[in-house]
Length: 218
Image (tube, rainbow, N blue to C red; front, top):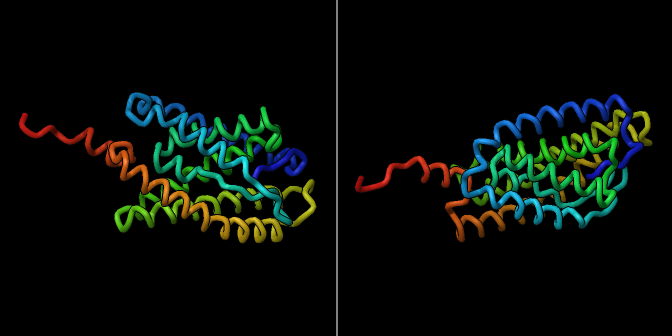
């Protein structure tokens, strides 16, 4: 899913940078109030795990590449603001240190994987967790990577610098990542289930509820 340099027209790359900058800036402001809770140490752990998972990728025709993203899991466990910051660090380090994704195209990669993926995953999980938490985590992982891939497909498809039209890029990126999303959804659900079982106090929502509940016997 990483977009290399040369795939985006300058105006599209600029729009991606603008959208990413606004979203990340808001996340920084809103995350300041969350830095004191027990999920803060998980920021680095989640970022490291996602970073390792994203190193496994392969090219797909008509798009860029397919790989595990992990933004949905970051959003589920850390919340939308810390999740965006965790994914921002991952995608930025990959571009600057490992050359995975272009520097000019970094705004597009941040928008797709650090903003859209996290927010879509978080929203789907929150919407369906009342029905079944494991199923909600699966849906979040699948939906987030699929929508993110569609965003990449639109960006590169609208760029005259890219060889394929938007119809090709959207269909190939969407279908390819919808299939991959089944795997990402399963992994997201499995890892979430483990964390929820081993450390339920760190699960978003449960931690907030326990922190707000009055202690019995006071």
